[in-house]
Length: 155
Length: 131
Image (tube, rainbow over all chains, first blue to last red; front, side, top):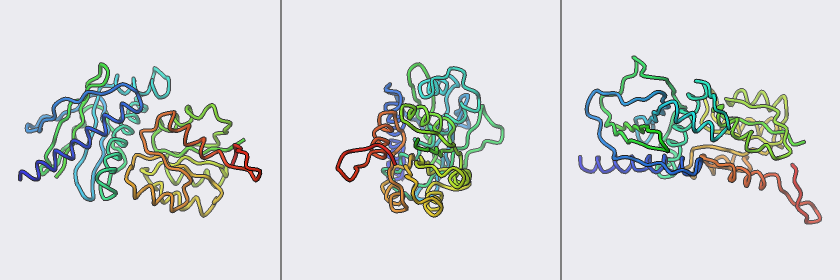
């Protein structure tokens, strides 16, 4: 049990490093990661827009990044120089950041750590349900003035 | 003018690549969000250079690369992907990719990779840009 907890925390660390690298490389502004915690209540940790990646192969579960609209707008402004991003652009941005964060973890976990194409959504879809057999870690994230969550669920 | 096709399922990424390569003498002949769309454009436009994502719906980038090499083997394909394991990189190079970049890619890394892709030596040893 203890070993599985350590393995899970090590995997979460890979996601934290991946998120930090994303912001550092693309925005030259470091992100700050809060203290991760195990989600125990039924509370669903979601903000305005979310990009989620399914994980299969050597590990099974999901990772998602959820943030307020303004964080994705800020990123799009940096990348494309536009200030009036559409909702489609915001969703695309949420999907792309989650794809990069999950994909980069393969540098450590190898090609058997398989990821899906992004699933993106706005708000809190009623049909959203997490599997019962996964441990879910919530990692608070702050970049510039924006607050977001990286949520990792693994069997 | 050098013809470029950009393939990525993210619209933001397609536009970011286009924006960051604006200073090159390139004609963007198309953009595609899936491997299937990309193959149609490769057949129709015969691009000189293709940037190709791997994780895409309908047809992944590695499968698409294999098909591109069958129908237009002269194309220089640069993989731009988040899948940062060594095996994926080696697999792409083995299937015919000429370059490989791991996301997140900033403008400097993209320019450096394109410089390398576009630059080749002529018979008199001088360096030229072109394909």
